[in-house]
Each structure stands twice: as C-alpha cells, then as structure tokens.
Amino acid sequence: MSEAIGLIETVGLVPAIEAADAAVKAANVRLVGYELAKGSGLTTVKIKGDVGAVKAAVEAGKAAALKVGKVYAVHVIPRPDRQLGIIVEGEKKTGSWMPVIKEKEQRGGENSEPEIEVVEKEEEKIEELAEEVVEEKIEEETKSENKEETEEIVEEAERVEGDNDNEKEKEYTCNLCKDPACPRKKGEPRTRCIHYDEFRMR
Image 1 (cartoon, helix red, strand yellow):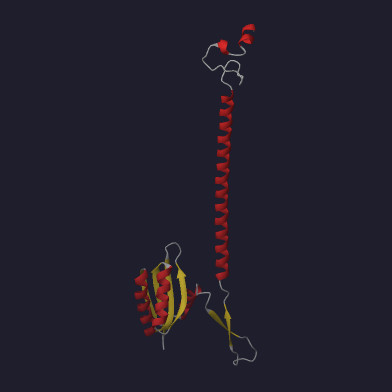
Image 2: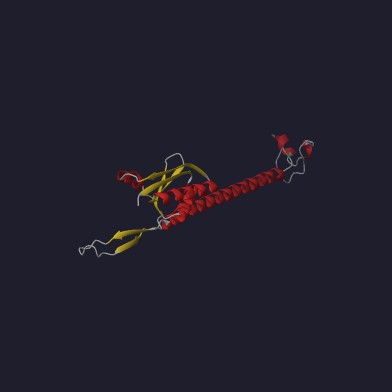
C-alpha cells in the first residue's frame, strides 16, 4: 500500500485542532504534527496514511474545521518522495501528553521490547506561569489599594489641618490686638478694644 501525506491549513489554532481530531477519527491515519506559520496566524496539520484514508481524513478535517473557523488550504500528496520527510517531520510538534515509543538498545538484537517513555508534561510550566501572573496581579492590586489609602490619609490630614487653621483664625475677633479675650469685632470702633489705651500710648 502506498502512503500519502495530507495537509490541512487553517486560520488559527482552534480550527486546526478540530481538523486534526476529525481527521484521525474519520480514517486510519497517523497524526504527524502541526506547524505554526510565523506572523500570519496560519496553522498546518499534517497527517500520514494510505492514499484513500488520507483523502477521506482530509475531507473530514476540512469539514470539521469550517464549522469553527476558516480553512486556508488543503492538499494531499500521494506517494511522496522520502526526501520530503525532512520538511514534513522536521518541525514535528505533537501534544506533550502523547507517549513516545523508543526501542531498547540491547545487544541481544531483535528480541528487544519497545519501551514507552512518556514525554514530560508542560502542565507544570503552565501552572507556574499562571501562578506568577496571579501573584503579579495581586501585587499590583495591593499597591493600588495602598496608594488609595495613602491618598485618603493625606486628604484627611489636609482637611484636619485646614479645620485647625480656621479654628485659629476664629480664636480672635479683634484685628487690632488679636487677643481672643477682646470683645471688639472687626469694623467696630477702636475704643471698644481692651488694648486701645496701649495703642494710644505708642
């Protein structure tokens, strides 16, 4: 049976994931990986399998991707040359949850059993990044709250200081002697000031 390569290029990652899921469910094909185009937002899903299976998978993937987004292009390469493997599998990206099968290197030869090595999950890294973002957000909120509290305290202090100044100004009514005990008010005759005699002697 001759192998074929199927390519589904979508605008965005979500339609690409949907296309990959539908393609591998629709036919007996293998998901090679995906590739992101730099700067344009295009994502290419790459599958392998028999020619008929790949054609069916590509059509199913295209139909599924069109339900959630846009499909830029689809293409099937029947019986590709071996040299294309560098292009197709060179930028291989598969999910970190997928196991990678390795053959045990034994001197015994062909009786070696395949060893399944689970690739380290990236969930821990994602969680760490999420925690850092949350911590930074909390710090920013705390700083803004502290700033608001400081501004409120400064405003309160200025208001109290202004009230005290007003009280000081109201302590005396006579603008000549400025004695709080003097009953004279501004604008009244000077003779009413209790210190009038002192002013006359000067």
